[in-house]
Length: 219
Image 1 (cartoon, rainbow, N blue to C red):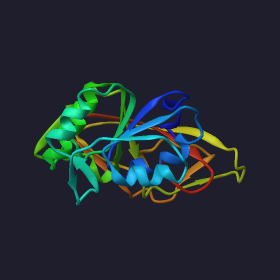
Image 2 (cartoon, rainbow, N blue to C red):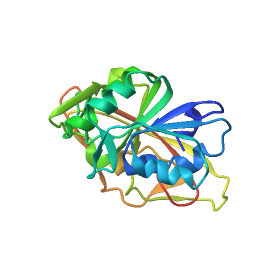
Image 3 (cartoon, rainbow, N blue to C red):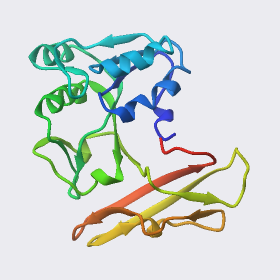
């Protein structure tokens, strides 16, 4: 839901080859004159179910992630201008480094990052506090970082399907952040307070805004 405000009519939207980005496609199809730009075969196949126009970056086929990479893909990506790009990578460290273990994917993402007006990074909590071999960028280089707390279980005091509420976490290291650190009230209860979120080093600050609604899901 936090990604939806970045979508609009007449936009060019880059989706990388992660499975997380596939969840955005049903929301994208609600807008007019949209163009999806991607190096992911899976994204094109999924978008075709909604008849969304796509531009597939050509290059060397990378079977592991069902995407196109390499020098041809990189050269093609350099000439693109994107309104908003959505990415995921393997790691987001406590000192703000966004990194990955895959050099080919990292090179494509670096080029798109330079050519997009807005960049949104999506992370699951398991990727927080880690650093991989290849640095993509730092947190200061991106528009927003959205954390997907996939295993977080919440209960609301109401059964109203229209219920919406924003709750927060704010912690400063050194410490371990758990679901119990989420600031709630009588309207929202955390059912698994022992859920690990991340570890903060000395001086590190973790702030998150969680948008709660009725139903299942974490996008």
